[in-house]
Length: 519
Image 1 (cartoon, helix red, strand yellow):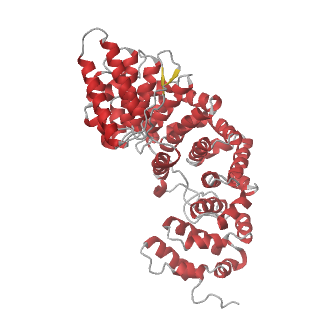
Image 2 (spheres, helix red, strand yellow):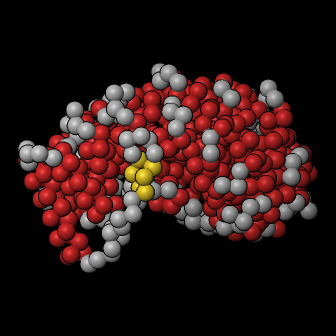
């Protein structure tokens, strides 16, 4: 089925059509983004600390902070707390419920406020089965809340500790349902988000047990913390690489409307989490791309890009826009052509990001521009005539390698006309001549010299454009002047067959034994 596939996250460099080799790149990028998010900007797992939401929905500060102490002493107190909880669960006398709740609170404080939570000691002491028992149906809300919080922080531990929650998952999912108080449902959502953040195996278990629909309903909430927690959990749950969950999520009634509402009106923290949901939906599902493009999401994302200085929001906003314009040509046309003002606003704001001191914004902005530039001739001309081009040219010669590589995609795509059939891409001569005379060629030669295979291939493709496309046979001489021959000859015995054949073929074609005889 069409909606089970993946559009590429970026069209083939310098070429204008989507090739089979690029078919999975946007999906792979989504997985990479998940790893980056976990290790850098965000934590895929999150400890619940310092405060608890009461049964009335209000946040209650917990002032009883645990004092830092040695690991041995802390583990000892953890064992005592778990044994106390076990005893409380067996107690049947007067005040049994309150005794159990107090024991849960004691364990929760240890897991929440310790500098390094003693999750391992807690699991080894047998806490998970007893906490799962405390989630049984009919239990008081306060008990459910405390037990879910304990499990949340256990799930934030190491992989084996997270996997110890397997017996508790059906109950955690059940308590996200309509019959539970919002406070309990939100805490269980947090626990499930931590489990989903562990990796693909745990995500698949949660999906098989039906976690997606109740979490999706939680994101529809008008309460900020509830929708925020649910969006974060959902982004962990659908992040791929399998597109099935993303396709299912976007079809759930109310989800698209909630994404539009929260992106447009919510505070930046909630908008950030919802934007990450949009990132994974647009990375993994063509159905989602189609529905997002038909909604108000694009102008809302553009407005966020124009008005926000919140880095953690800007990154998923840029990723979402980049994914949406990275589909097939019709999708790219849909996003910018009907209202040229939107395209101009996008490019103007991306240019602002290129000026940022933050390298991650420069890289993301260049990536989005490369996707727009791989679209129609009108898209290429819009970028070419904007202030983005001098900024891209400057970055190509001065920026760190990862940014230069993205910039090269953007500039290269401006020089190639959209393909109307197989064969070599047609050169947009005006763009190529201008960019070469403004000094871009040395930047592409430097890419050819890089150890990165993808970057080297991009550089070689641009050199081929220059040698073939520049008028009056000027191209080979310009390449030679920038030491391009030496850069290409380093591939003479290269282990990568494609690069070796490509470079050797270009040297033979343009610098063979007849080169220079006409001078």
